[in-house]
Amino acid sequence: MVKTIAAVVSGADTDYVLEELELAEMQADEVLVKMVASGMCMSDETIRRGNTAVAFPVVLGHEGAGIIEQVGSAVKNFKVGDQVVMSYAYCGHCESCQQGRPSVCDDWMKLNFSGVREDGSHTFYREDKTPIKNFYGHSSFTTHSLVHESNLTKVDADADLRLVGPLGCGFLTGSGTVVNGLKPTIGSSIAVFGTGAVGLAAMMAAKLEGCSTIIAIDIHDSRLELAKELGATHTINSKNEDPIAKVQEITNGRGVNYSVDTTGVSPVMKTALTVLGKGGTFAPIAVSRNSLEIIPTAEITMASKNMIGVVMGDGIPQLSIPQLVKFHKEGRFPFDKLVKYYDFEQINEAAQESVSGAVIKPILIMDKTYRQ
Image (cartoon, rainbow, N blue to C red):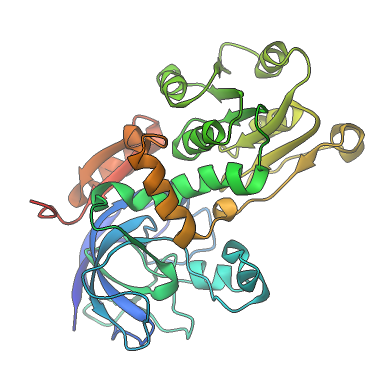
């Protein structure tokens, strides 16, 4: 029986507690991963707060990076010793998956949010055999985890696993929303609301895609300064300036071609739609229960505006993650400027500093001996 140390959330709005859990027997299509590090995402915080249907107790985390220690008998594409980054799970055989869109897999919610394997079994148990739910088919707030093959992306041996975990969700979502969802034309304009990990990834991708006007909107001056460093051509502190009027000024009254909201705040989403020019496209991508009230004829139809849904950046992790690693090596996607490292035992501190805005992307280190 393999044991693991996991950060367990036992109920809504309770702290993470490190517990020793037992792992179930590995299935044929799974691997055992020794976790090196994991990013923390605001989706984890949303679930910890009890704002979703995910059941407790649960082990969260979905931006893991680690090394394969065991391989199931049906696994074909991975071997012991491979360095891997973990992202979402998908079935691989439904119509959406076959069309190259695994982020809208027919079984996406079941595989990622049900807390159990596809056959209904659990992967984590307390010593008294109480089952613990998993998350995203793997749960990365652990020292070891059983991971389905579809969750895995192999990265080169020279990739630093202490850094690359967040490419599995936050940075994949932000960059993919621009590249795969909005598909901006060279020389176009974009406004990004919220300069957290997802928003800044969207801005870096907009720069890569050739947008000539990249507007960052936030309420934190320090984050707006970082946005300038990462590609923003203009910044707006919406506490001090009217973002609608300012965008109109920047674009000579035309509005932007594209906008992205990463806040999920209702008035901010409304503003992100309003600042679009004719024919523009808006992508609201925050995990939020907040609503957006619009008058379709006046606010969308008559200006030929578009609003699109983009899940996980509409990316195929096995293609997108290595590409982002390559861009980082080339200095064109410097996401390392957004991270702060914490020991695994500091998980609650890391969560608090992320929520407060003091830190953009916390990364927990599970294996302190990695590369020593």
